[in-house]
Image 1: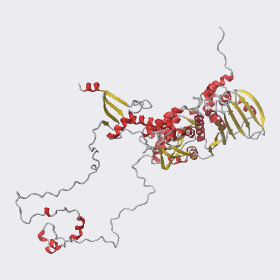
Image 2 (image 1 turned 30 degrees about the vertical axis):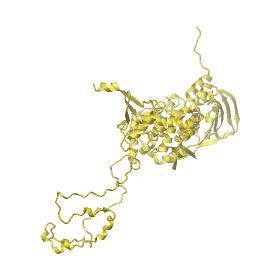
Image 3 (image 1 turned 135 degrees about the horizontal axis):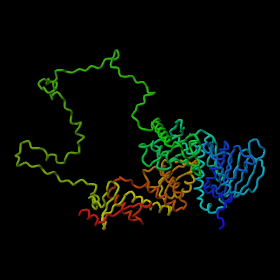
Image 4 (image 1 turned 90 degrees about the vertical axis):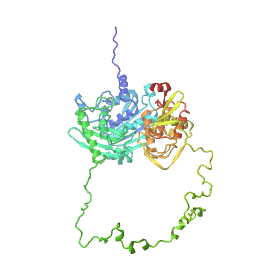
Length: 632
């Protein structure tokens, strides 16, 4: 029987490795920019065409490569970062495996121009599908210039499953943000289709964060700084009042590398316990400096998950540092009085000042208000008071006397009780009331057809029994169909804002916003681009009074990012559902009989009243037989 196990060619092995390392154009940008940082670059330019599907170019002013190094860099496991296995636990660079360039060259057409400092000539190499097509000496500037064209040109299946240009560009910007946030000493620029999207000069860390996410974030950040023998933690955390349900900026970095760490995230969340509403998040930018020997970076293909040797002590240090920061900046309510720097207010001195006497009072010690005989008649008798003339108050009552005042005068002589009777007043037409002009109006309250239970459920009688309706879900169902109809017919009802609201989006969120802009306009939103990721909200859909337009638009963009819907109908459905949930009545809202009637009537006018658009039950019927069984 012949042997069946064979050693794969390098080109096939590289394509297999590329499946783990190079997943999308954003992976190429990440690997090339990290290599530029490891090369000591101070300025990096990234140029992207068609969201990286056509071309990705990364230019840096680093140390460059020699002719031999430029050629070996595209071989598998060729690296300058490590020499032995022990070096894996003493890493100070972003890359170390030596797989990135080999994986990129296996699935794309790569053009490299590089030159070392002090050299007059550099090297130009062209590689396509792991095959070196040309190599020559050329004159070029110091550093490296990588150009990656036609990604996945030799793997049609992989290229077919790439997302839309807006989605892939958003992924590129997300990777770009992570690298820019951890390297504030390096200046970056990013261009897409010859349009500058980011220009970040070398600057301090706090200013770099504002350069990426907007200046408005500056007032929401608290400084975090603690140093122990085990770890040094610094960065910024958000104030509790800035918590939001979606779109929080949450970043962990360790030794200059971005990471995801749910365990440490829980430490931050626990520190905000009882300070923010349940289900909401706060932004944070936290940087760890740890001995490389105490962490393991080589546990994930993209190196975004890192294992710590002392996770539990670091968890406790992080939680204590966040709590200390919140307390130091008075983010936690406190009853302590801080008198430092307060003005010195002198205490009250009971000794009166010289030359000042309290006012004296005079009274009659012999006066007794209950002893009438002791009061001199000439002073306190009623005759001593002069009555005021009636002319001062009689005009106030003119016109209010009855016409026949004489009939109410009492006779001068006493009348026997049996013969006296109260005279009947002159018959006058009754004063008109509010409903006399509309005799057909029924003033009586209609009997309640529905009953509201605890402000959340509507109970109504049907032929088969007792129907229980969740009022919030019912309203979501109604509004969803309404918004979908507006999108389909492009007949939105927009309400102009007297003072437009400002909303800022990160570079990664702007492409997603532009992709759903037409659908937002169909819903009734009017947004104008102010540049730099800032937008003015000039109009909102009618009927969403009381909602924050800025939060509403931000949440809808975040929902689009999370769902990642590619089909336009799915995007429209997601936007309509998001707006319907935000605008629906909340549990606990008391409804009148008329409001309940309208809600029930509108619910049964939709096509599918039984379920919400996301599949939740709207109503349930308690059978009459089941009701009778309860009382047997």
